[in-house]
Amino acid sequence: MKTLPACARKLHRGHFAFMRALVQGIDSGEAWDRYLNIEGDRGDARRVRSAIAWMRSAFAAAARREQRPGTARLVLVDAQRWPDTGSAPAPAPPSLEEFVLASGMDGFSEAEQLERYAEVHGNGGTRLSRRARMIERQLQALQWLENLAAQEPLAGDSVHAWFDPRLAERLQRADLPTLHALIQRINGVGARWWTCVAGVGPVKATRIVQWLQTHESSIGHAVGDHALVLRSHLSRSDLDAVTPPATALRPLEKLQVPQALDGSNGRYRSPRDRNLLRADNDHRAIEAFLSTKDDMPATQRAYRREAERLLLWCVLEHGMALSSLSVEDADAYMRFLADPPGWWCGPRHRQRWSPLWRPLEGPLSAVARAQALTILRSLFGFLMKQGYLVGNPFAAVVPPRAPLRPLGSGRTLTKAQWKHVLAVINQASTPAQQLRGRAVRWLYATGLRGAELIAARCGHLKRVEFTDADGRPTVGWMLEVVGKGGRFREVPVPVNLVRELADALGAAGRAPSVDGASNVDVPVLARFGGPGKGPIGYSSNWLYQAAKAVFEDAARTLEGEASTRLLQASTHWLRHSHGSHALNPDELGAEVPIEIVRRNLGHSSIGTTSGYITTERDAQLRAMSKLWQHNAV
Image (tube, rainbow, N blue to C red; front, side, top):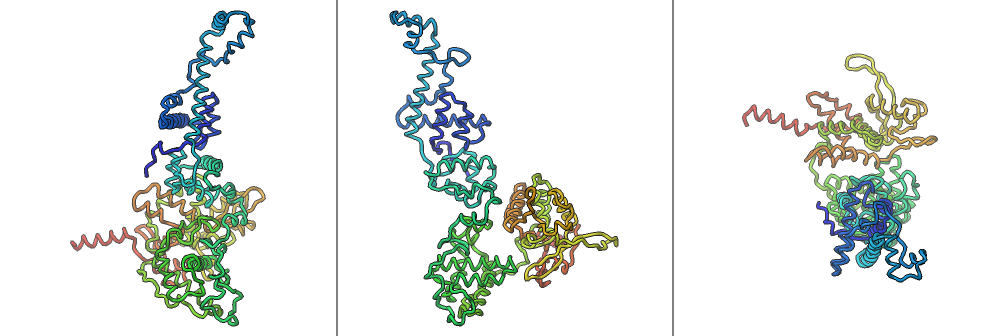
């Protein structure tokens, strides 16, 4: 990606205000902070000089375009370097008239007055007068140029048109090519929007936001109040107010369905006297279905996602009520999932309050479409049993054909990649990095689902005594987990992770023991507020983004396929890696019995766990290479 040339930059009124201050002798640092701090820190003298040189060059170019070569030369002159009467600045001399009155020479001839004026003030008065005239001429030229060349920022303008080339390049690389895209990202992510822009920190981000606020009338879009406050300081109602309900791409709770499409009179509605639900439209019927999954949050989210996508498609794309769908319509929807329009798609981690939220990340794979079909069959099956619908259109849809691959195939870290990630985690220097690394290590070590780790509390950790492989008594830790389908299991946890958790509790002023009575309800992953504030658990979204941040840090020090793989990795890859690495040890590792891995992962069937029994690619090639070499293939 190439940086646009300097000539592509535009001049705004702040450039002219800064240069007027410079011409009049005002401190350049103060003027920079007032008008141009978006360009960077005034302590960077090289950058300030470069910006001043660019502005003078841009002013001169504008004058030449208007056939004003004299003005072009004039604005290139530094008036403050014009010669003065001495080494130190001197006050401006009085005019001749003022001198005559003050010296009592009003009765003398003009020649005598001039001679005496020259004796007292010398030629310096003439030189200073020239500087004053130069300053006045430059100020007039800048005013003329401002009226001619100053522009107001517009929403569709490139960031290269208004920001320092280095800053603009960083924004461009973060997929923020225009001012509109930049404001959308700020409003869609919130106060910490800058964390996804390499090379932009909180100070620079604040300056960008202030500049956008200054020009919001011409841009036509404003930075929302919610984006000026840290998320932790915003209430649920503050976030809910960011995106109003509408008949548009909105989450289920904010989707307004037109009466003609709400299913009140759906084609395949059962007679009203057979309906066991209080729901009188499709939206409420979906809510009734989802309420049956209240005790399974992860399952409920998956079911809500599929029902939400279908209802949005019915309203925005198909123009038909959900309760009017035929088998042909259901089949059309499944084809839609394989090739959705771009405006339906966005990054997975955009939260539901955000205007950047989208129902899809991109086309669904055959496996994902098959899962969606299973869930939709369940939804319509429920509505049939409750007497809301007379049939299930998805029951007749042929599932997409997906190749049978080992569990986690394509979404598992190799052992070498995991060791590299672990090395990066061990180099973490900030508390935030250390917490993210600890979360990733818990996921890998235990094989827990993300929702299970988020729900884990210190009180779920139990100290146990057991005999090690050498027959010696020792102490270990088990984590009590209630997983999918409400199934209870106990999962071993490494002693060092429990010790680190105890240290974190002690550092927060709590009992430095995970089994302390006051720590029973403390989340295993938590942030601790100030005095008087209890621990606050993290969300599934935080966990997902924490893992992504760790993988991105690890990817920066690699190249090629290894780097690409880490950039694709997410929280669930760690669960797959746990199962794969346990069942497929390398030469130095120890194979874990499949029944133990099944219990760790919470699989109901050992057949599911056996899907992890694969040999990693490198090991496959090494083994086969020996065979080929031995048999002279």
